[in-house]
Image (cartoon, rainbow, N blue to C red; front, side, top):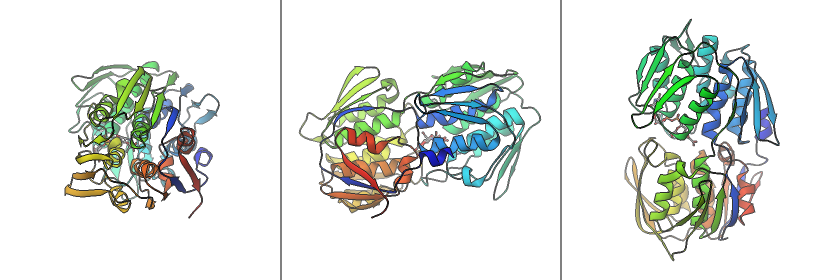
Length: 432
Ligand code: EPU
């Protein structure tokens, strides 16, 4: 029901390139911050209200999952918030919902903590790599859970979870979040090391603390200590702004040689992205810590080198957008993707537009610029790669048709309206 509410009205974006974008864009609440907070809402028997929720299909899917398991979900459309009164009547997440997104796995941690059992009939996500959940399951196991994995489902169960020492061999965002959700009501102390310290993980910690959890984070040591408590309370929590949306619209301004102001953001979360834009010749005026202006005053952008890393490094979720931007920069840019094995799905599409991109090795591409891109018929295959095509199309000569827009809708609230407001000629149609 919520998913349907947020579904787009068409599946092809028609983008007329060559318009300079000017104006103000308000940043929405973070997708990847909202999803774990929604999963956390069922940890208490009391109602929690989460504010600044983006109305996108991944959130619709999470709200449908919460409803399916038995919780009462009330959406307050005007204030962009949602109230969840938890109840678990059915701790099984059916495949038609679980396979729509990877974040469905986050319910495993909170169901395990509250109900002692959860079953998920597969899980989805963008096709950008293998994306196993072995680190999540290992954390559950160390906390005392029994894991059953079959071809069509994963089951986790535990009478009572017990605090444990859990070291992650990679600082996985989802595994850190799931370990937090599972451990905050476990018996005793849990020590998590080599954790992810993405702002979205810290936002989840803040919500859990507002619910009464006892959690101490040492960001410098990548360590989190959770002292398990018996009950959690309902809370009111406002999720952080979407830092990837900020970076994406900053690239929209740069790639069209525009002048866009972005507001309602947190500049501390996007330091690495700002640094790269500035290196490429983009001017970022920091008006306040929640408000920036992105302009290109120089005649030409400069090439760049990017290596994606866990936070505070350069975010993988901005890599496709920078690939599009690099086509406009003089010289050869090198982009290395270290987080996912298969996150260059946008590259063949950009090449259709005339981009000069070559494969250096399995993880690195080289982009030669500047190139005048040409409007083309393109295929979006994932959220960020799809948005990278929209950005390229905004800067191209002529009209582009981008199908697979439903992927972009998973992560970008009202992106057509936001772009139109700053002068883009873009609309969504049913089919070409
Ligand atoms: N990994 C494993 N085993 C695990 C967990 C992760 O091998 O048990 C690997 C993954 O296969 C991947 C890498 O570790 O290659 C990173 O995965 P991580 O767990 O850190 O990411 P995630 O929790 O699955 C979240 C975001 C992603 C974002 C990554 C990295 C959500 C819902 N998703 O995914 O967002 O790319 O962190 O920052 O929070 C997006 O928004 O487009 C998106 C893909």
